[in-house]
Amino acid sequence: MKTRIKNKEEGTKVLQIEIPPDLVEKAAEEVYQEIKKIAKIPGFRVGSVPQDLLEKHYSKDAKSEILKKLIPQGYKRAIETHKVIPIGFPSIFNISFEKGKPLTFEAEVDIRPNIKLRNYKGIKVKKKRISLSQQEVDDAFSQLRNVYAKYSDVAGPVKKGDYAVCDVEAFVEGKPITKKNNNMWVLADKEASLLGMGEELVGLTKGQTKEIETKLPEGYPDKKYAGKPAKFKVLVREVKEKELPTLDDAFAKDLKVDNLEALKKEIESGIFKRKENTLKIDMENQILDNLLKGTKFTVPANIVQRQKEVLAKRLEAELLRKGLHKDEVAKNLGQRMQKLKEDARDKVRIYFILDDIALKEKIEINDKDIDERLKSLALSTGQSQDEVKKYYEKENLLGGLAEEIKEGKVLEFLLKEAEKIEEK
Image (tube, rainbow, N blue to C red; front, side, top):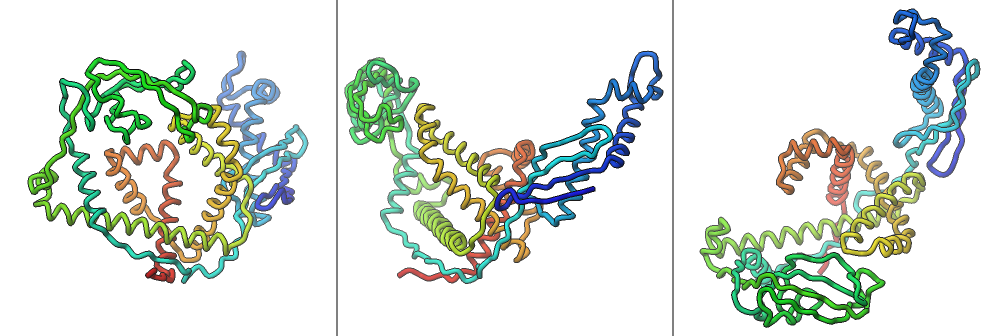
């Protein structure tokens, strides 16, 4: 077997592989022997079909099976011979297969970049002080009361501070610009939703319709309508009055807490933990920025391209959820392609840097780590752990979950080893 290797670009190699005729012939004999055991041709018993008829009727199937046998063998020999460590699966092309001649093909592979890690221990990071204000606690109590507020039907007209449950249609130059929103809750307040037009609903009763003229903001998601005059047709279906619960021990007990003071301590603890988590993410990002700036290497273009496509699809889905027209989404994506490519390159580089650190520090994950993450995902989604696991298996996401867990462990290690500078 002959093999050669050449560079296509940084991080990508092309293996040229030639398998001699005698090995091809041997593989063909083995394949045809298997086909002969099951071949059905009129006039012949199964297992007794002559070779020439086998080749006439089953050559296409035989060729496929021969290639399935020989290409993996040739590829394996080539990467072992040239000491190539591939990333992912190879791209096979330029296959030449004729009877009596060598089988030749090429395999394009991305290879692991050669990274010269700088000292990743003791990276300096700024650690902000965490403080908690009374206003933050008051705001949290306010949000909690709003969550458990009750809404009662109102027979009379909409008053300021009420909610009107409406069907809303939006038009520019007489044409609808979005799908009709049914049962949309609108707070009757000038500073509230529906482009500040909530106060326009004051005085309306159940079943009444009103057309409201306004101007769309310059920052409206769909740029072709931004800044243009618009008309909203609003039908009031229901009027609701909001009633906030009293902030007392009884309210705390409804939330399975002993008293109001204990509820306050839980709220303070929750705010503090969220701030700690935000601080942790900030320090991890400082570490990642430091590693990116201090570790220079090139990553395979194919992998960057695939990562860019993933980021582009996520952005596209996000823009569509915001209600942008598909033409505007396409334009937006076109404008951000360079930034997406840069972000993709950084994500791929970070992956290899953290993976290299994991190898050097022997940071690994096990089945217990994956089970704990699946359990956490199950709790957050309200599903059973088995359901979450089956979904990740079906969508081939367990590998990505494992990498995510490992990266988290590496970041925890780097943060523990970092030199934290307290901000005054």
